[in-house]
Image 1 (cartoon, rainbow, N blue to C red):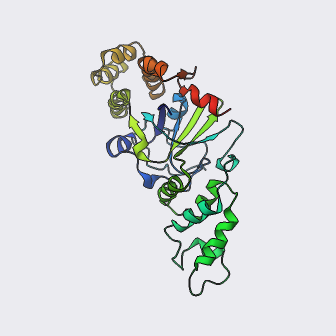
Image 2 (tube, rainbow, N blue to C red; image 1 turned 180 degrees about the horizontal axis):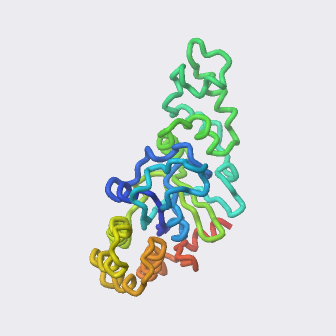
Length: 295
C-alpha cells in the first residue's frame, strides 16, 4: 500500500530525532485504545496538541511520558504492509471484526516473555494447579479460551507489563501478518506503526526540527519577535520553505508546523497523484485506496 505522510506530537522531539522511536516507550500503561505502538495522526493541529506539558486524556499532574522539555512535531512517512483497518464507528481494537484462531492464540501465548516464570506468569490466573509449573496441555487449554477473540485480548492478558508491547507486536506480526493499525476519524486518520523501521523522517521534518529547536531555545529568552524570526529562518536551508515561514508573524509552534504541513503537501502532490493519493482539507494525506478499503 502507499506510504502515509503523518505527524507525531511529542514533549521530547530531540530524543525521537536523535535516537529514533524507542519501543521501550510503548505499552507504558497509557490510554492506548488502538493497542501499543507509535501513534500518529493525519491532522497537524492534533499532533501539535500533544506537545503541551499535559494531556487532556490523562489525570491532572500526570508526568508526561518522555518528558516535556523539547516539545515539537515530527513529520514522518509511514509504510505499512498489512494494517488492521478500524472504521469511524470503532472505538478500540476490540471492535475490529478480525478474530484470532486457537492456533494464533497459542503461538502468541507461547511467545509471552514471562509465560513459564511460575512467580510472574499470566497463566497463574488461568490454571488451577501450577505447583509443578505449566504443561503443554495447560497452554493449549488457555489458548482455546482466546479463539474467536480480538487481537488486543492477548496483549492485555499476556503482554501487559512495561516494555512488553514490542514483544507482542513482533509475535502478532509473525503469527497473524498484521503490522499496524489505521483508524478512521472525523478529521482524518490515526495510524499506529508497530515498528521503528516503518517510520522515516521526511525532508521537511529535518528543516522543521531545526526550526523547532530554535523556537524552544529562544522563545522565552527575552528577545524581540523580529529577532526570534531571524533566528528561526536562519536554520532553514530550503529557500521555498523559508519563504513560506517568512510571511507569518505568528511564531507559535502550532502556526509554524501548520504552515510547514501545507508546504509539505504542495511538494508531495506529484508523488501523491501518481500513487492515487488524495489530500484532505485538514492538511492530511490519505491514500484513496485506504478510503475505499475502510468502507
